[in-house]
Amino acid sequence: MVLNASEKILESSSSVNPTELAYYGNRVLKANEKLISTSVKQTETSASVSLTLAAVEVEVFMVGPHGTKIPRLDTTNSSVDIDLIGIAKNNNETRSAAVAFMSYNTMENLLKPDFFNTSDDMVKTMMSTVISATLPKTTNTKLTKPVNFTLKHIREFDPNGSLSCVYWNISEWIVDGCSVLKTNSSYTVCSCVHLSTFALIMQTSRPPEWSPGVNNVARINLCISLLLAHLLFLLTQQFLSLIRRHQVLCAVISGVLHFLFLSGFVWMFIEAVLLFICVKNLSQISSINREVLSSGFLCVIGYTVALVVVGVSVGLVPGGYGSEH
Image (cartoon, rainbow, N blue to C red; front, side):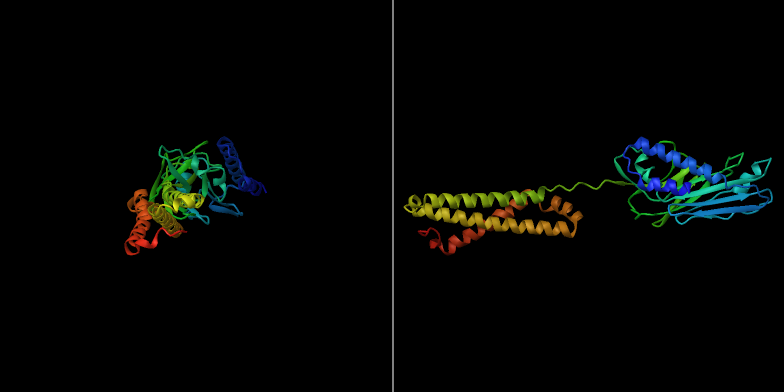
């Protein structure tokens, strides 16, 4: 009942205060460790206790003076290899020892990966469940050899990321005494010279923020083209009686109107292309932005196409501009 209640607290935790998160995380860890230690009993050979709840799995193994072998302790997403026989032999009075192995599925809500303090501005992701390993009711808890933890990746593995085996030290995740033995896309093996609460954290570089400057260039120039075209059209209608007297001025205004409205169509086409690329592959737009679609290049396309069409029209049908309308 206590374990279930504590896990409900973990699931519903919404505090944004890091100090409170660390405080409650420590309380939950200590309470659970004390609770699980009550299941440890003296034995001459070996005994075990297993407990599986929705958000926590517990494996407790006890070995006595006549114990000869300890199996690998497994949970759904993790396992541990520990020399419990050697530890028991170092307890001269009882020649017994016990290990409690717990895997928390929701503990990262409290002990967040952001508690892993690094100098670089990196994105930190919890790649495993948070696990705890203790030696309850064992007098001499000194390890005879490093303990190996196999942690299954619970999130997609980034081959460019940096993995760290960390342990919880009251207020932060640190790497002291822990190292990565081997890793692949599915799991990582960590080796630690002490027992505590452990996790696997991956650091990745923050993705570059995509600048919307390319899209803004198209939109701004579209607005400019349409504004000038409509403004010129309205002014022409306002002073039509004066403009009709000057055939050359009338032809120039007609050509400029043709150019501005054509530019509006070209800029709308460019905007449509940019939106298509953005929807298809957002990461592609950055490289295209740097290499090809610079602001100057877009301006050349946006206005040169319209200018060419108007120039060809003037060359082929010079009298096509400047009617009395």
